[in-house]
Length: 76
Image (tube, rainbow, N blue to C red; front, top):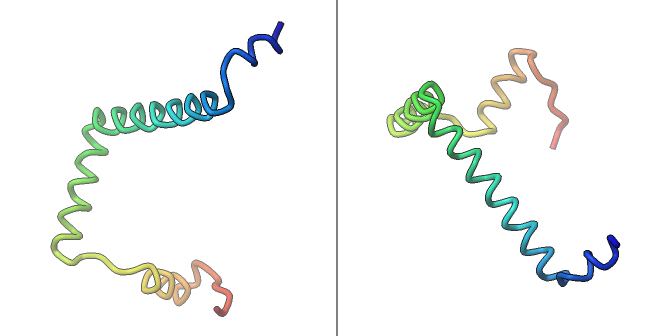
């Protein structure tokens, strides 16, 4: 019986359904974030920090953490 049901849709249709499912999951996550006032405040604060230049790139952060002994970094 399962074999018959599996043959009702094509592989392209299955791929499309998986993609739609993934997109719906992303939309649900976005809605959850948008409904959380604390998370939205944190996002706005991060945007303000970025706009004011209160950011650093990944390599700077990595070096700071390495110097503080919080991470070990292999030589590139």
